[in-house]
Amino acid sequence: MNEVSSACGRFILSVSRDGMTPLHVAARNGGAECAKLLLDAGASVDVDIPSGVRPDEVSSSRSWRPLILAVRYGHVETVKLLIDRGADVNQESTPETIVL
Image (cartoon, rainbow, N blue to C red; front, side, top):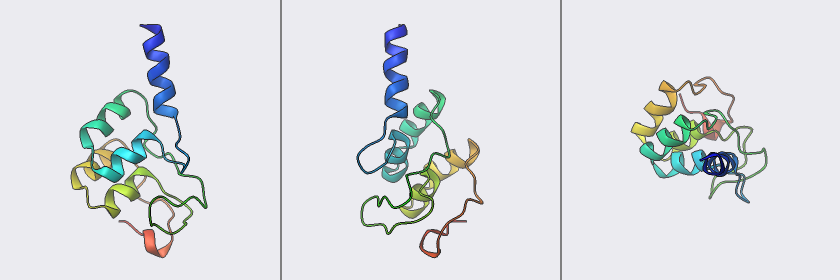
């Protein structure tokens, strides 16, 4: 079981080439159930994509947190989950990423 926990922990903290964690991917794709599992397993609700990295066609910004992605792609259930789990609704953003 310890090996499984360790592998899960590494997955939750993993970052893709474009700077996205599994929680970013779940938020962008509207995977509320997946996001819930990731958060329950210890994923950080306010993890940023590094500045200058551009997920998809989105322009560079100072902050690409899961909440911004969920709002941008219209995933209401995921937005509610992230806010319920303590996502910062006052996070800094540029004009194209103003969320709330």
